[in-house]
Image 1: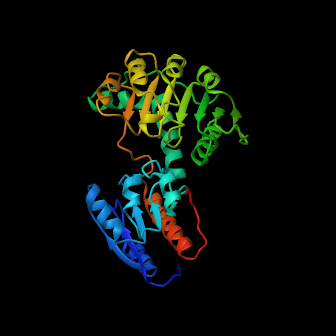
Image 2: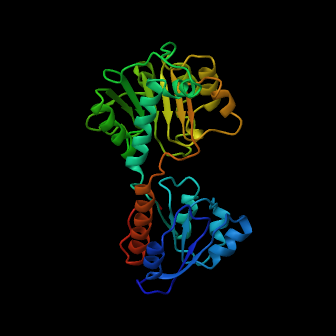
Length: 313
């Protein structure tokens, strides 16, 4: 397919962020239709049936949906994650899929390290007391120093390595676990049982998949060191969340920061004050928003030029 404005490009669902510059550049690659809502299944099929290329942010693309999108040739998700797309079906149907692996690496790593700092110093409960007018109240806000502490990284990809660089700057010892066993400079690779046994902080940053479902299992949650801080920027299903909520509510953890929590568990986590729960904003900075659009444009342009980038299927 050549880079002439004949490709039908459909932004499938409710853009989080668009700019006129992005739309102008995208329009040079094809005819562009942007939808500003989240479609149901039948509407998804209808929209994809009018597309050669689909940009997808929120919608699950199952095998059945993809089979009915007979003209679709490429999907570019605006996410780094691809668990919302049936990649096996896409490959079988000849639909290539690209993602955006780089746009939010620094933003997410900053979220992890700032969360670790806030939880280590109990800034969340201390702030609430300060806002209530209390002055010069030290207990129960005894903090811990990050220097000399051990952080265990569950996942040592782009984000994990960015967290490791920041952690080392604080003087932390860095452990890590990855499924491939591939060495990573500056990170001591260990098994998950050893990681949870040795770590003062555990940070989870792995993509959601069948292989990573409850990667931090109930057994491993039970083996976390008393007072351990847990931070996760992964999808909730990568952790045995009920076990984590119960252990935190029992006062066995030093703090928890989660960017995705299953329905109904937030109140259990919130029983302890040193808790941070955010609605999926670990990636959300001004720079990341713009970098996301730049990465999508590169993905679409690469597909049209026959020089694909960031392809996962």
